[in-house]
Length: 71
Figure: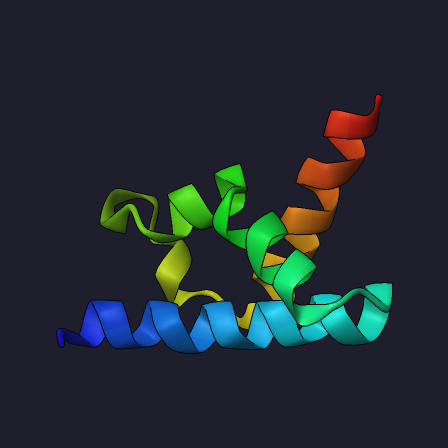
């Protein structure tokens, strides 16, 4: 496993845990939501540099994405 993949897996774990805790959602729903988001897609694109950001920052981006989808 590359450092890039490891960093992304750790970040995904942390963001999913935040979804479970902050949104009070089941882990399976949190995983589905995050893994199917544009935020996750960008996290896995090394050109975005998003993988260098903190899980809290990425969670905030995900929240903005979800708010935009609801409008």
